[in-house]
Length: 406
Image 1 (cartoon, rainbow, N blue to C red):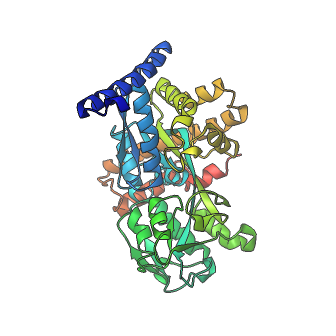
Image 2: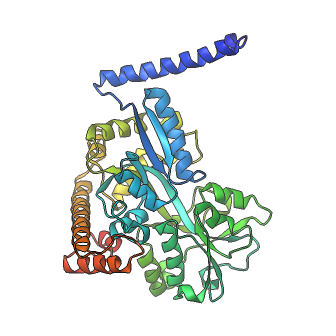
Image 3: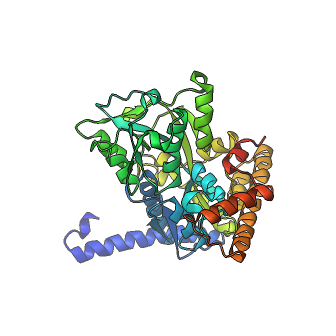
């Protein structure tokens, strides 16, 4: 490109030529496979500054450069919006972790709407295996869960159900109620972390891989993390905790801010989902591209190396918590990574998801016939849905029902 530096216009022409050649090569390869990528599609992510937003920017940028198909990243303000936007056709792909999925299938909190509630969505790939835990300021006197008690100031963000359940799980472990502590309400995910270095809260539930956590660690007081107590330390307390947090796997932290490394902490397998009726060929081709081209973008973001087939298969081998899309299954079969055990689990998960979605749609119809508004702050609707589930054989807690599968 140095021979073009004599002219800005010539330089721009050189860049355009290079991109054109890259797109042309990729499109020729696609043509050989008899597949034509869509002209564009949206990928719905958490807000700017989160690890999953940055990861989406990394892979979609490379995807667009190689294929000419425009993949646009669309950040949503919270998990409830992400679910609704997928159902409203604002995007074809959405970031979901197991705890989000379980809360959506329960129509918990802000998911109790017509568009955000139980929906049969399917995984297509694994984004990250992300630690989640409890952060305090570096100079805090709080050393463990046992130091949480009456008067502790706990950051509380109602913007996403998994942040709400993070607080509920911590309080459940200590056998406390929200009235026993001081809830410091904040408006979004970034503020949920920022209140710790600012000194406005004592503890928060967040992830060591997120941008706000790096910022907090770099502050003058830095940060610390509370290790998750092992089950054998207090089985009853841990059971109360896990009842609030069924979508996580406990293990030692390897990625994220250095203050978290080596600590025992819950982890979420965070994945991209599509609707069950998404085009199987699109899903197959996209997962194939993500696998075959992983080396082209895995250095573009700190945690992009985790977006691998190996992590997807590890999730399946350890008991998948969400069903896979048929296009993704086709690719795994093609490369010899899909097993009979995976299929057995898949069939169970699909049956549960379809029954839950059908039940929710029927409950909405029945509730509206009685003049009940489908709104998350309408207690009449919340009670109606709870009763409908009990009377029609739907699980009281979808996450617990998934964990109970053989």
